[in-house]
Length: 232
Image (cartoon, rainbow, N blue to C red; front, top):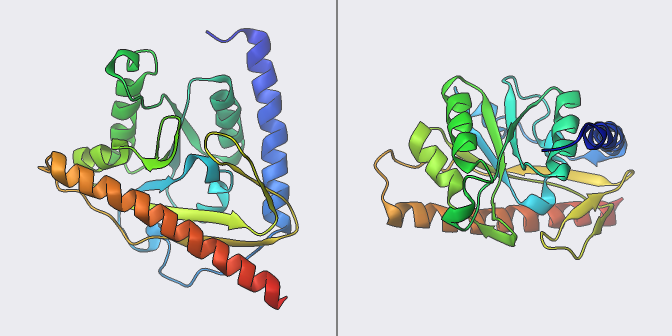
């Protein structure tokens, strides 16, 4: 249980982080995305948006213009409370909980209630944004998104939102800290769908496609911002 003082600190940190991200978005020249490339231009209902944990800082830039409400899965930890504060200021909802690699930790991480909340959100027309990584294993996709897509029938769209001005950190999720005054690029994948009767093999195959797809999108986005910077 988080104390009142820590909640206040988290809200204050969220205020500062939201102001910083807003400043980065205002001062970054994002390449225009062609019409028809965004998920809400390609599907009539809600969708699951997915990116790497360490590359989620500019998720607000990726979702800019989305006509439907979006809820974001964030952890129960202090940093998750900070992110939830950022999301609230940006007009997004937060679902608290996270995945785990062991059954013994499911209850502590509120994985099942979070999954049910995401399913309800998607069924009611609200988009859901998640990070793809297996907890504490960078850039290896877990099965959560594929299982959620199977349960709801909603498509998965992968995205990369990167900037040329950034600091790449040497931490567990290989996070990138976006800096202002750079070039930016947002790329979305084609829809990934999972059948309602998908078995373990299909879930495993979709999970592999998510890993490969996110790696490809980020590599391509970085290539584009490098090219744009070199031509400037």
